[in-house]
Image (cartoon, rainbow, N blue to C red; front, side, top):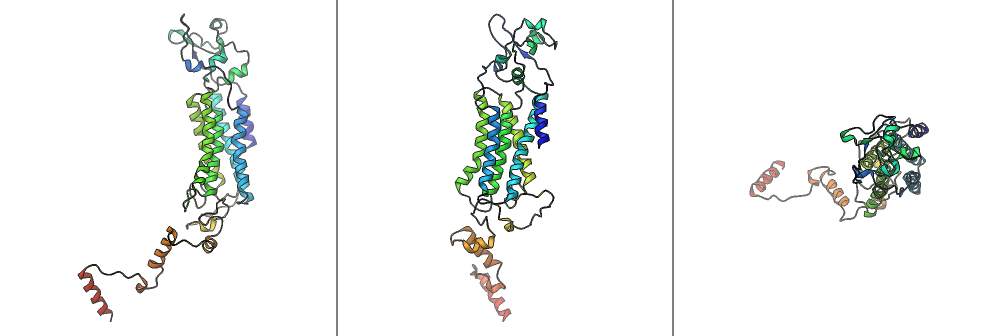
Length: 340
């Protein structure tokens, strides 16, 4: 992971690989083509360092708090390492795309401060006053003295904020689903469902704040969210035995030991979870002794049906049913005579 982090930092500080054109025309009227790049530079609501901190610190805190009940050192190890790997790998991917593809931020022209008189004297790219009606220019006409700030205004695609947020909070979403058994073999409490979706709300708030301060275009945010989500799924599956299979998705995998998936209902793997509902957090036999099913519950009904129809030793143990027609009455009477 240190190699991934170092590579991401080195690529981020490297020069941009591509040169982009942007249109400018005044034509005596003051109109600017593509006004979506003419927003003011208001500063970011959530700074880059704060976005990275929130994307990592809150999930780590949640994993540590879960250990009050989980109490498994391997769960702490896999949970935190998987989270850091998710954020690091997603960051590396988005940084590579930023440097090779990039794109203008909505406030690019405010940072660039273009001066069209520089097109002739400072035309190092040869891409000034080109295209239809010669309205396309390059960064050669920018008057911005801070080259780092100018470079930052040219690396909008994809959004690093949304990438890190979804890499961290989607990972936490999968972790909470596994430890709370929200979609498992019992009906969960509504607060568990709400708590599981809370990380996704946090990721959306961070990502959508970029549309308020005009730091990113909508497609930058969507692409970053997709990258973060995909990496979070892959990272979680690399550290735990499953993603959606509620029987195994809470089990941390060992580095060199193969995990044997049971063909049964997974009752032997009911530890290492936070919830204590539905028999989780203890062996099924212990849970059944402490909490026998209520007479009106679905578990009690299923148990009665299994005992009545599959647990009987012979036909006499089956529940009696009265024949509904005269033909069936006669047929059963004949069978009774034959048996005698």
